[in-house]
Length: 229
Image 1 (cartoon, rainbow, N blue to C red):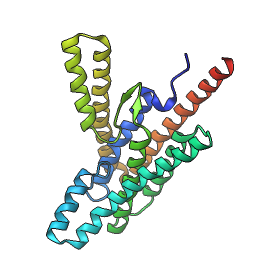
Image 2 (image 1 turned 30 degrees about the horizontal axis):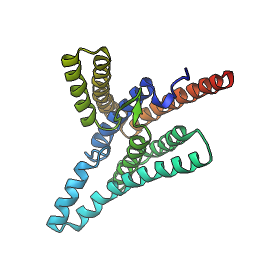
Image 3 (image 1 turned 90 degrees about the vertical axis):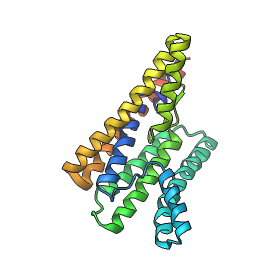
């Protein structure tokens, strides 16, 4: 049986989920108390700003939303051109862009303008991660937000209790651990922000590099298996 791609195995989901929770804590504690991972809050605030005729607020909330949209479109563009040319490095290309983007945030000073820029960058990074890494072990896991994972945990837990299936119990446990790991990422991000301040974003850079290594190693295993068949 062909080995599962590194981008779809559970250890990759673990590293990316910790990264997602970390970045939320980073932008909140270091970059102006903003949650840059999900855009629901920004969309709500945008609607309020429009209703109140707050031009400055409209611009402020449009920027991370726009960056999020660009992140999604960037991944779709990469996927389109790589698949068209039969290039198999889609996830690694996304990780490289994420790593380089977060490296920039680690060296931008803590000022109002640069904080806005950092939040835009993190919104872009999280959008790329959300779009590129959607399934692990045959299940849909979100690595930058937790609402869907919490819902899936309860869904599979209910199925496990009613149907008493081992597979449902295992899947429920996986989702539960992912939710805990996101919280763990937030805790790690909070502590790192207090100690490292703007340099704290180097921690998710390390986590993404580890994800890259896992994917690269698994890809070599797949190539070896294909040659042997």
